[in-house]
Length: 232
Image (cartoon, rainbow, N blue to C red):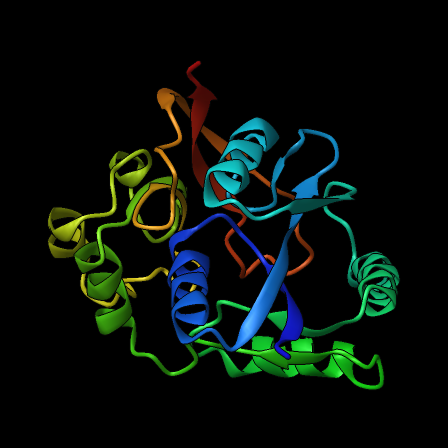
């Protein structure tokens, strides 16, 4: 019997590639996609994608969606408390695995492992050390389609927001930019590909610049967000 797994889902390309590999290998039974949203705006945290598009994405992938609403700019204590409650819920549903689409950031992996210690649920990282050049091009080669919904204004200019994730985009990225945006350079939304029953339809809206107040002034807190609006 396969272990039951919940995928910690961002709606972006790394999550999609990891899910593709998990389903191909048939190691786990993925019972749900778990996504955190900004409670104030009802959008995917950091990606800025509307909840309605996320819901359509999950529907067209054929996997149930569980949304977690987080206060805007939630501190780590609040985040940890909410996720602990969520972990306990899934453990009670006989889930034993949380899946993550992380590629190489050791501190992020260590944090996830620490948070799940003693919970009865263990983390799995299906595309860990996959190689970001390979991951980016395999995503495109497999036939998935994504659009950049947010970019770090200190690393990429406004023109990258709202661009499709394709070979042309990869060739246009400035030197030193991770091709998967693993260092936070950009975030994406996947809207079509082999696992979709049909594409998620949307139209591009306005691109805006948004800043956040952070204690560490050496950290960029400015991002360009391109709004995506559902099309019936």
